[in-house]
View 1: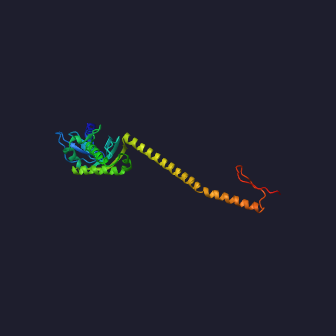
View 2: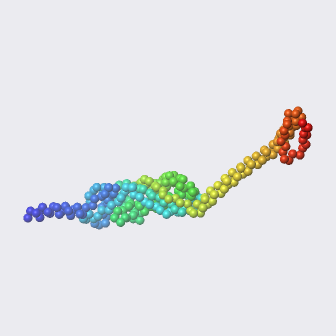
View 3: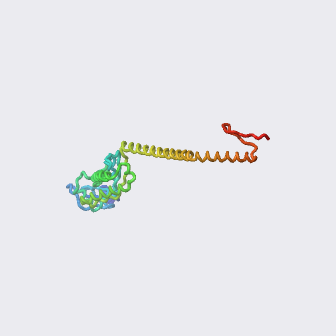
Length: 266
């Protein structure tokens, strides 16, 4: 008779534990009563909550990621980006969980396969989209990648401003990371053609400079033609003087020589 008496507390403990939910780290829980009402008090991480009567909803609140992909915003040059991706990291203040769940539209939230509810996930997704379309309009398509850090800051600032206007102080945007920013094929083709044209222009400029230098060289040679003739005449005069003085015995005559040579009888 004593063994069943000893087993009874163990059975009661097992039943109690089986009907208990522990809130994980980085999550906040809310109790839903049997009458479907939600208690306002948030259940913090590590707390044990019975689920024999009613249930517990869990909400991840730390470093929740929202991926926003395949956007095609309009750039300042009126071209449409081919692809624009980003990720937003946000946190929920624990004391704001109850208000956000009870008073905000269910369409603002997202539930995963395990039953965890990501508060305001869909809302943050849409807010990020709107911020991208607003910020991208300030930059030319080909300059966006060069201004990645600035674009991230502006998107984050725009989202924070939107949350403040909506008095959603319980949501904190901690980080915005921009991924792919790809301009349209037409813009890329135009850029390639422009680079090609600039390279051709530089090549032609070099060719012109070479032609100018060659023209200057020829002009200098032509300008010195008289001086060359004068030097040749001077040389011939020196030879003639040498011959007259008897100091020159041999003279080299060019093949096209048309003058006269007086050869001494000696």
